[in-house]
Structure formats: structure tokens, C-alpha cells
Length: 210
Length: 179
Image (cartoon, rainbow over all chains, first blue to last red; front, side, top):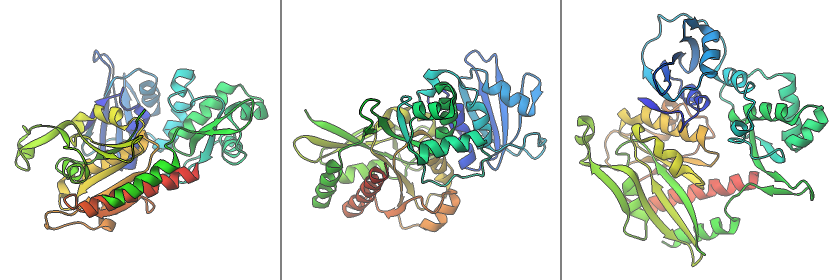
């Protein structure tokens, strides 16, 4: 059974795990005092319905995503009797939910600074995702033109926080990957902390000799 | 000052993680095993890792590689974040004959995929000669894309463990080149 604390995995991450695993069952979310409980139903990794505080469907998902939940438990079960009230894929729900995130602290979990630089991910995106024109523009500016969030905000004449929110969604879905930070004075890119290449090469030689 | 780098070895219960580390480490491995209590687990092995296994490979006087093995049961998932922090890469070991663990393997792999931006390699462990699944079959079972790397491995063979580590290191080099 997939269960744990939402301190270890965010709700978006848990939903992605279920989506990638194409799981069928219900995801039960509760808070510390068991005062709030929400359920999201999945069929083969796609969201089918949700329930919370008398709401169902997308209204319940919005309620769940805007409530501070503490624990998750995924229960494998048949949900054939559950009505299909939601027609959004998990990535679409994540984009929808993460676009509401407006705290820098939350955004910094995925993006280190407004000077961060990004790369288009080389991984397959598991599901078709409908992106907005603004998201496409941001992908172009960051992924192709190699602008930072700060530079893209200037180009788009938008507040940095609004660009950062969109980037947070795209990084959560692994469409963009943070690869480093641009020095605002020098303009050169400092790659994300990674082991020196010669260490890996020496390690390869060492293992071959073992 | 000695620089320490880290590789994570994960996988479902009884997949061969502790064996993998014991086979390659240059020090006596540090293991934190406890007697299994769940009836379905104790029929497979007597002890299981509850916190982590630990192995080491010294590269030179200044650089050391640490190999951390995670517990296989999902109820210990709070350890993953701690162990995975700043890791170079992850090897997920799956017992090729243990069909009952494939669903857990899927959860473990997908947890690392969403949590960490490092190369992940699947090592399909062949060590008991029972009816075993192939790499292509396990790819379908785990719903993994074609690009996802899977290698065959025998956690009891030093050469095989070396080759698995080398395959992961090549992936790390490729990822560094991409950045």
C-alpha cells in the first residue's frame, strides 16, 4: 500500500506517482486531527472523481488542494461504480493547482532563484498536456532562449512571481529542468551543484580495478 | 578535507539490495537489519533492513563514494528523502523472479522519478534461477518508457555489480553533459 506523510511527498508528487503507475483505487487524504478528509478516485492513473465536504468532482479537487492535508493513503480497489465527473488528466490538474501557488517559500522547493536557468526536459511526458499560450511562451523563453525567470518577466512585462508560478508548474511536471543559475552581474551560468566530472571519471577507473 | 559522494541502492523487499552492497564495499558493510515480523516477509528471509545499509569505495585520498541501501518496505518511505538528498544517482534492484514485488518496485521507481532529478537505473537481479522475467517484460509491467535504462545483474557477482555501477556512472556523465 502506498501511504505516508505529505511532509515527505507533496500531494502533486503522490498524484504523479499514481499517474505514472497507472493505478486504480482511491487516494485518501487526511489532516493531523482527522478533521478534514478528501478522497480522489483514480482509474488507470487518471482522475475520475473526488469527494470532500459534500462536494464532488472538480469542486472537491479544488477543496482538497487548498486544504492543508498531512497524510495520504492509496487504497487499491475497483471504482467502477464511481461516476466519471472529472475529465482532466493528472498533469492538467497539477498545472491548474500549482498556478494557484503564490508563496515564494513553496516555489523555492523547485526553483532556487529568479536567476535560475532551465533546460527542456529530454524525458517523455507521459500524458498529453494542454498548455496555455503563456506557458508555451515561457517554455520558449526559458528552454530555447535560455532566459532566467527575471529576464523572462521583463520580456513578458509580468511580475516575477507570476512567471515563477508558471515555471513551478512546468518544473513539477518535468517539462523544464533547472540546470543552474546565471550570475546577474557577469552573465555567465553557474551549473547546478554537481560532482566534478573528473571525480566520476576517476571513480569509473577505480571500480574497474576492484 | 575528504569529499563524500553518494549513490542510493533501493528496491522492494528481499530484492538483493544488502547483497549488492556487501558484494562491492571495501569495508565491512554497516547494516541495520531487524528480524522480520510480517508473516509474508518472514517466510522469505529472517532479517530485513529497517533503516539503511552502508558501503564505501575510496576513490583517492580526497574522494570517497558512499553507497546507501534503503529499506524495501513502503512503510519506511520517510527514509527515502533523507537518503536521497544530494545523491549522484539511484539503482533500483528488482528480483527478476519475484512477481509479487513488481507493484512495490513500480511505486519505488516512480517515487524517485518525481522526487529526484538524478539518473535512475533498474538492475534486474537474477540470482535464484527460478522463473524469471526479461528486461522487456519488466519494462511493460512497470509501465516504463523505452528510454528508461534497465540492466541485468547478479547481486552476488562482483563483476556484475561493478558493471551495474559503471552503467549508472555513464548515465551520470551523460546527464552532466546535457546540463
